[in-house]
Length: 324
Image (tube, rainbow, N blue to C red):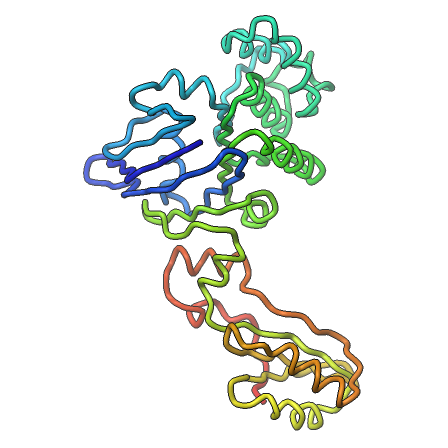
């Protein structure tokens, strides 16, 4: 549905986007992630025909953004970060105006009814846009992006200004729309991307530095993984039994555990089947398990490694447990 091939955009001596190539299929929800100034907005401006690339090509629904910009605009719905609304219009007037500009003709009333329901605008239809809260302004702008039933949705910070219940509603709506639409979602809220998106494109300094879902990216970024273990047993007994795991496992015991409970973190190379060995030790020692779960590289740490480079050793410290 969206094809970017060697896409580059320069502003004078500044390169905002450099040699970006990717394909986004119909029905995918793709998250655009990157620090401020990384090139996300530039990429979305090119896709929406707002600006032209310096070199490379961008196609949306089979249409080239340079050769057929009006065809591209016809099949795209766009929610920009800065909401473009007419403050003196009523919400109902604004939606009708947008629908008429989109030449919906006989479908206008049907589409208006749908977006009003989907975006929860019924309580404010007869209010002027200028007096609306930020959340209702955001939902009104989302309604204009959806009113013509576009094949492609470009959403820049779609849940900005919404309360928690409204955020959940918009997330669910986005997931429902993905059955027959292609959606690009740009946000600085990493958990939101992880919750909604099927795939993540990470852009840094104008370049595409990663492409995949968060679990794929985690596996690419780390060579080690860890298990958090807490059992009802003396520390010395736990130390003795865990020696059977060998030198490939680094065990870090945590001070200040509750009375009678030993807590530790076992760090080991990705690919080693430690869980079955650990289960056997726990069963043979007859320990009562208080906690047993696998640690994962956080979304924030994944973002840091992708956009700053370096290794896991460069990440901020998360405590100072005592070494065994």
